Length: 107
Image 1 (spheres, rainbow, N blue to C red):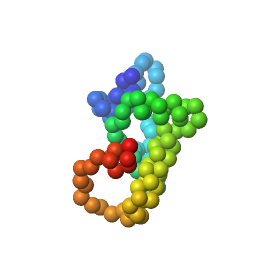
Image 2 (cartoon, rainbow, N blue to C red):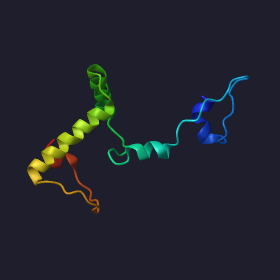
Image 3 (cartoon, rainbow, N blue to C red):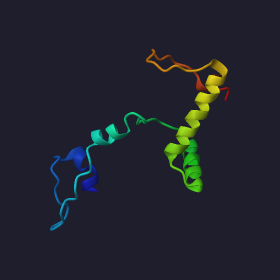
């Protein structure tokens, strides 16, 4: 457990957790992993309803998919539906406004 949380609360130098145990090789830096997928993907963190997330996990497990795949298909569906009603979306930075997703998508 110390190895998992070591970078959060302990010095960054690897230390064996038991006598004679050698520290494992360090994983590649997060920045190098992010660079690999920078052009195609973006990492996001959000809060999701527990029941909805459990259902997504069930579907993923039953169908042999990743949660990421389920979210990507869902987002594509939402964007396609939105664009069919409102026209193409041209992405650029805009000032965010507060809205109601259930009204936007007729849920």
